[in-house]
Image (cartoon, rainbow, N blue to C red; front, side, top):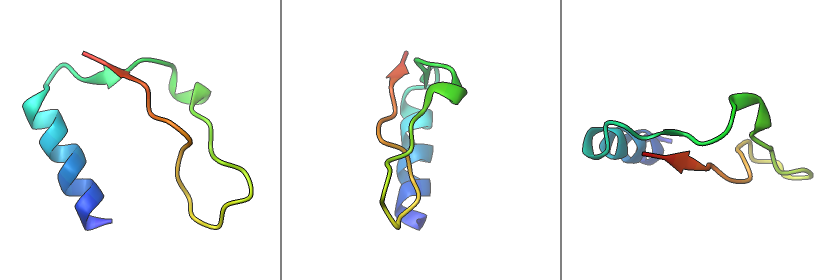
Length: 45
């Protein structure tokens, strides 16, 4: 979890205009997995 927070923070610092390419409601969660997350994270800058 800490690694993910650092990675996302670094991406935002490096690419300050990085934004979601789709509406937040369109993000899909993988089905049947015990780990929480999303299937993909489309971004634009």
